Image 1: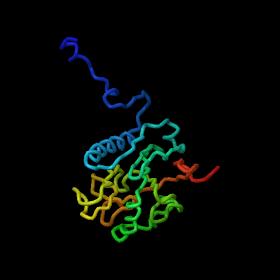
Image 2: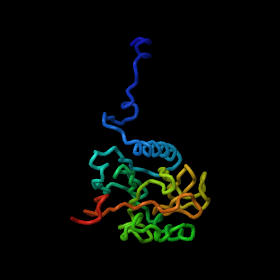
Image 3: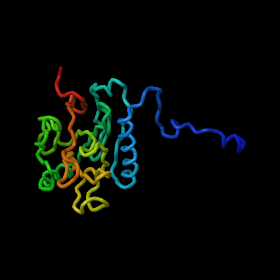
Image 4: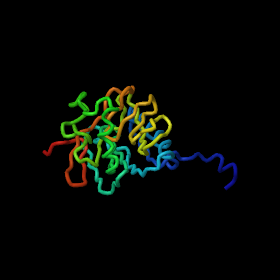
Length: 219
């Protein structure tokens, strides 16, 4: 191919990004958090030596409208996080290690709402009002949107000192926009801009390793 031909060829952005594009109208709010999530994930991926499973992909319009999302978590390994979409929001599914679970109660004095009593009906279903904020201790299910200004926090699972985090960091999430930090149960630390814990969406197990996100009652 000649130099002139190669220079005039226009790259196909769908090939470069690995995403497919449709001609349907774009939800501006959804696109915003997708961009934030991708940007934060790119930085976190280079700095955190923790395995992640990313299965987020734009859903059908039925899911965006509120239909429940079924997720098989059987292949999710301890220490991994999987992201799916529900109602246009990123929902994190984290399989916590025994060490991560053991650290949660020790963090209570540092947290703004350790027992999730603020806005309980809005942010924490009754079955998640425990020290793990979950149905099964090892699996945390939470909406990955900061309660301050709606940014998407980045995963910082590696414990210990690191930029923008305390020396006794036990693992969790950092919202780089204004510095809010959350533990691995989505609970916000004291004296941070975010006023509340992360939302736990309605969910239930329809099998041992199959989650239904968006419903918590059997028909």
